[in-house]
Amino acid sequence: MKIQDIARLANVSVATVSRVINNNDNVREETKERINRIIKENNYYPNVIARNLSKNENNTIGIIIPDIKNLYFASIMDGIVNEANRRNLNIILGCSNENFELQEKYIELFIEQRVKGIIIAVTQNSYDKIDFFDQTSSKIPLVLIDRKIDKQMPGVFFENFHSVYRVIEKFIKYGKKKIGFLAGPQTISTAKERLEGYKKALKDNGIKYDKKLVLYGDFTLESGYNLGKEILKREIDAIYISNNSMTLGFLKVLKELNINSENIKIATFEDNEIIRFIDEKIVSYNMPFSELAKKSIEILESLLKNDTSDTTVEISL
Image (cartoon, rainbow, N blue to C red; front, top):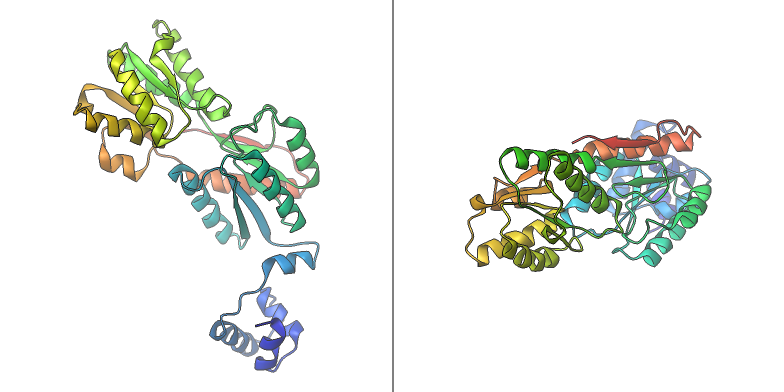
């Protein structure tokens, strides 16, 4: 069904239907109700992309995340969707699956569709792609979330370094001395910052850094499982695991080996209901995803007004 069909059924002009779809107040309430009823009865959905292409201004933003299956990024996405709905913004979503070329295609597609701007959690191999992001940000307002690149750009990020530092310091105060660390890919800024927080906390508290207690994974459940089996051979008394997926893999190892988690102090970066359900004693942070969403859209709107002040925000945990 086309907009012309809706106009014919409602006995009004196409322009009147268009005004109703775009929430224009210059339509009588009775007419508006009739048109909306016909739209609902006929399951008519306006083509947002086509509308964007037909005018210079639109109300749509593009969102790109690297892994929609990961509860962490799904929660980030949920926060942005809720905030966008609150502001009457439309969203087009892309998932890069940690593939830079696919991420590049989504950005090009969103620019072609004339979205207002793009909010993006970059792929793990984006850190040194400065030229690409410089060129992109010259074409369209771009806001980074969660992950940084090797240049300061507008964005909203969680406090990684200090968050890990505080947890490791608490472990040490509890008397823990052999603290293991399951790190994420060091091509990702969040993984690098978390590892640096671990190292600095050890140094500041007089504990020598032991590289044998640090194993590197890829933020997946499988790597948490495989690395968990290895690090448990090293007689650790506490462990910090860099994300929730790896934590679930580590907990699977504990279950298989019949090891009581009370014997090892466990911490991970982000809290979620699955980990709480399995073991509520795991130390983690309650993530302010709604704040990240609010700040990222605020920064995007500032960029649209050519206001570049305060365009980088770090959220404390």
